[in-house]
Image 1 (cartoon, rainbow, N blue to C red):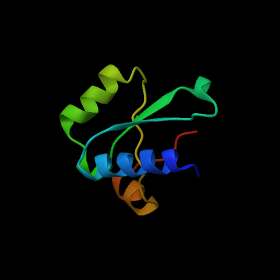
Image 2: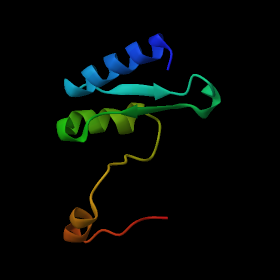
Image 3: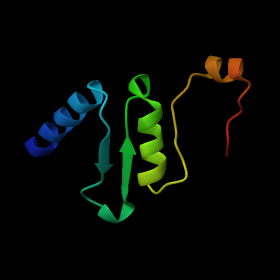
Length: 78
């Protein structure tokens, strides 16, 4: 990985740890667009609202264990 990518990744991880959101892009294929992301354990109502309002995407996704999904009565979407 080029040094500039490593530095950008380090900055992104530091921002996520502080509860900030970051925009992830693919520099090789920029036509794929971008993803606005944040750490789930630091998410706030205001942060999620910002993502939905300004992210221009209809989806907010989270990673969740199978046990947690089962306890919440949620099923996988296809």
